[in-house]
Structure formats: C-alpha cells, structure tokens
Image 1 (tube, rainbow over the protein chains, first blue to last red):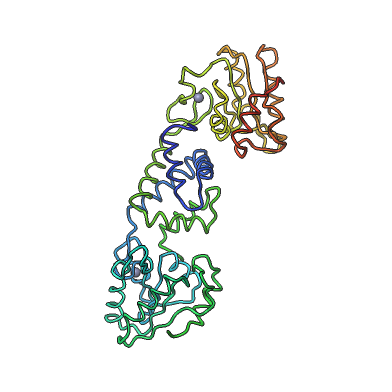
Image 2: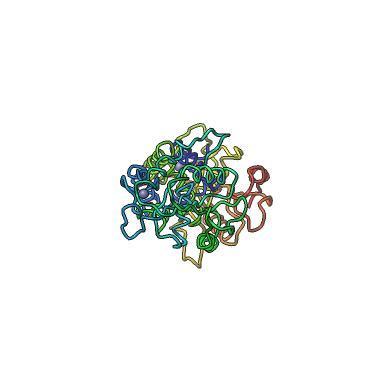
Amino acid sequence: MTGPRDIEDLIELMARLPGLGPRSARRAVLVLLKKRGPLMAPLAQAMAHVALTARDCTICGNIGTGDICPICTDDRRATGEICVVEDVADLWAMERTGAFKGRYHVLGGTLSALDSVGPEELRIPRLVERVRDEGVREVILALNATVDGQTTAHYIADALEGSGVQISSLAQGVPIGGELDYLDDGTIGAAFRARRRV
Amino acid sequence: MTGPRDIEDLIELMARLPGLGPRSARRAVLVLLKKRGPLMAPLAQAMAHVALTARDCTICGNIGTGDICPICTDDRRATGEICVVEDVADLWAMERTGAFKGRYHVLGGTLSALDSVGPEELRIPRLVERVRDEGVREVILALNATVDGQTTAHYIADALEGSGVQISSLAQGVPIGGELDYLDDGTIGAAFRARRRV
Ligand SMILES: [Zn+2]
Ligand SMILES: [Zn+2]
C-alpha cells in the first residue's frame, strides 16, 4: 500500500503507457495530485473527450474526430498521390517534414505470417479501391525498412499491378531496420524527395 | 500540425508530466488512441475521479479521498510516534519499507528563504499542536539530506523544545544530497531503524 485504492488504480493504468514504468507512473501521479486543478482535471477531461470522439477515418485510416479526417477533407491536398504508411505515428512523422502534399492511406500494421495478419486486416483492398476510384497517379510506399514492411510493400505493388498507377518507395536514406517514427524529420524529408520507382 | 486540435491539446497536457517530453507524450497518446476502449477511457475516468475526490488530510497532510486519510483513521497505527516528511512521495516511500507503524505529518515542502516558504506554509504549527494534543512520545524527522531539509529539521527541533517529546532523525544511511523518493526501500528502512536522537 502506498496510497488509497483509487490512486493505486490510477498509477497502475498510467504505468501501462510507453515510457512510464511503475516508478515513473507514481511520480507522474504525484505531480497530478499536487496540480489537481490546473493539470489533472483538464488532462482527464481532454482524455475523456478524445476517447469519446476519436475515430478512424473511413477513407484513409488516419485518426480524426469525425468519420472523415482533416487531411481527407482538405481540398488543398492533391488527390492524385497517396502515401501509404503502416501507422498513424508514421503519418504524423511524414506530416512534420512538410514534404508531402497529397493524401494518405494508413494500413494499421504490416503483413505478418507470424501474427497471421492478412491483407484484409490492413485496408489493402480499400487502397486498391481508392487507386481505382480517385484517379490516383502515384502511390508512395512509406513503409518501415523492416522485413514485414518490405514484404507488405511487395504485396501492395503486386496488388496494384495493371492499375497503371506509378508506385514508388522512400529512398535509401531510411536506415535498414529503421522505424520512421524514430527518425529525425530531415532524414524522412530527404528520403521522401529522393524516392524511387518500384 | 500532426493530428487534430483536440489530440494536439492532449499531447501538450501529457508532455507536462515528469518523465514524458513532447516526443514520448506523442507516443503515449498514440498508444491511448489505439486502445481507446481498454485503456484511454478507463484512464480518463480514473483520473477525473481522483481529481474530484482527492484531498489533503486535515490531520497529517497526506492525500486521501476523505477529510481524514486512511493512515490517520487506522487505529492499528501507533499514535505516540509521528514521522515528519516533506512530501507525500516520501510518505509513500517510507510506507513501502514497512519499517514504521505510527502516524505521519506531511510538511508539503521545506523552509526556504529563497522561495520565502515559512513555517505557516509547512503545517509546522499544526505539528506542534498535534505533539501537544495527541500524547506523542517521539517525532522522527525523515527529511531529505539537503540544506533546506536540514534547516527545516533544526527549526522543528527548536519549535518542539520544551514539549518533552523525543526527537530523532534518520540515520546517516541517507546519502548527502539524497532524496528519499529516489532511494531503494532497503536503504530507507535501514536508516529508519538506526535513527538517532537529535
Ligand atoms: Zn482520412
Ligand atoms: Zn492523515
């Protein structure tokens, strides 16, 4: 026992966040307890609000607060280019570079024989549909340089064969085994600009 | 822009927690977004509940969910001994050792000429009152081995002079400049058992 049950429960939930172990979760909760008015209450409210309103964009899989995300509804974004990413984190990383002005498609993972993740789980059929329906000229595969990422890239390239769309992937600048979300923005931007056709 | 405004706000609030910078706050929020049902909603609810119900114990300054904390209401805890700590974090650290079975008094900080924190801000008058009214035999000063901590210890020893109470402090085991909350439980426990009279 360190504190009342309710506070213990809160610490236990906080400890499930990445970057916070049991010890740092306790310290975070103590700071929250001291700043109940200025920090804890607004944080709880913001979190409850997002938990209630956030949803996956029905077009691209990005997370927004409506059925269609801000990027898909932004008509200043080019419709002829789709950048395919594994994860919302990768979309955010790409957006921070400012290098891409088109639309996205968030797979929500990679094909994995090990975890038996198939194309259906990954919105790949939806991507094929979009390429057909949205007059897409180029699909940029911005997938992690991991084995699963590259397997997925090849699978998508095969699935889009015959559609006439140009398929490219990020340039060699992405280090082997590297994950986009951990790279600096400059590296991602440069790799994007030097992208090559598959 | 990385995500919708509401999500940005949430990241910004999370980044104010100790141990989370802007980058790790973003990663934490992404995990929450993916686990909206199983993690984000319960965490928001637990946090809102604690923000609403937590309050400082009117006797000892510990944080509980009622006017009087679980330690002050627990009649198995000895009433003749009061362990004085700077902070609730230190109380929790002391409780984890299991070495102490009495009551606490949480100062809420240390005397500091620099930050103009005086005895009134620190519940020191309340401590003198408790020593007089609760039949206290021993006051154990479990304060950090910092300059401010030791200044505060001397001030309290002076304030209690003539009350007939025995005053002790943690043994030398606490390293110079060390803060209780960062020490391992064994060290705190040993220092407690070897406490010496002031
Ligand atoms: Zn979208
Ligand atoms: Zn209490």
